[in-house]
Length: 353
Ligand code: NAD
Ligand code: TYD
Figure (cartoon, rainbow, N blue to C red):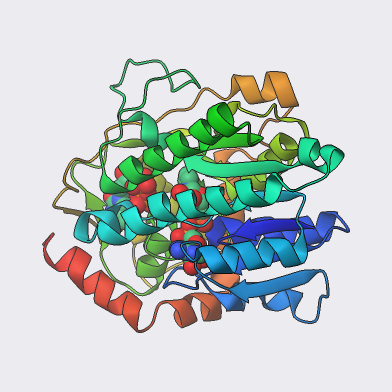
């Protein structure tokens, strides 16, 4: 069995669904079910005995110890985190708690469990930590993309807490020998992403006839990675990654935000045309994010060289699939976009007018 944390969130749930479709190995899925966690996403696994879901907080050492002792996983895949930069600006405390204290607590529980394993299981055990390219800071237009040796320079409370967690993971390998793997990936997109992030937010607003709020001048650049490609990369790293190593995962898709939003509008114009005009007319420039990183780009050649992974989707194919999914799954969006989410939208966008 493998243990997944954060498996009710966007990437974790995609990973669990793909894993159970592709292998016969069971998953223990631990998630606190914050606003970002959604059991509805895991509905297709209802009745599947290979999926064990437990609502728990990774900061709860007693719960982590008990779950490890009971289920004896061969690997921990750590996705759970507070993950949204804008929320980290409004309220950084939860980010320090889950990303730093939570990762520390999980590492301590993993170490205590790992030390007791028989030699062969001990050698085969892996702690795979899922992190972000944002720990490397911001690039200017002409800088080479981030590599695994780029120095850390996080700029937001989110990226600073992810950087802190990466350092702890590294230290547990160097100090205690825990067999860890760290992946730093770029911006994911695809099915089941919470509509506070750029792509699902723009699709939802476009369809609702609302403004499409582009921060600043819209020329910030992100590298976009289709979530299915990311999950495949993680499976490859888990199987063949070398303990103690870090791997950058990227989609080779650097895009300006304005270009992403314009392409989304074109896809929606083609598949769900408005009675009159284009969705592009809804694009609105709003006040920039404080400390907004200008550019992220990933050099993912190490992963291709050492574990034989490269993305299967281009931005065009991945985005077309994503738009199709959101058009076909309006109920999923409507369900997650109620209640607490509405309060967030008011808090984040009211001050940007
Ligand atoms: P998400 O916010 O959609 O999901 C996070 C999940 O973790 C949620 O289900 C939430 O309930 C759970 N969680 C939060 N705090 C918890 C706690 N204390 N205990 C247990 N569960 C808790 O995030 P995501 O987009 O799926 O990101 C997954 C991982 O990938 C994160 O570590 C994130 O930093 C990293 N990452 C994400 C992206 C991206 O574009 N989404 C890019 C790079 C890295
Ligand atoms: P986001 O999806 O929040 O991811 P991250 O900040 O981790 O890269 O944002 C992606 C980019 O889109 C980022 O440059 C901020 C920008 N953005 C907007 O222009 N408008 C929005 O409403 C949102 C949510 C993001």
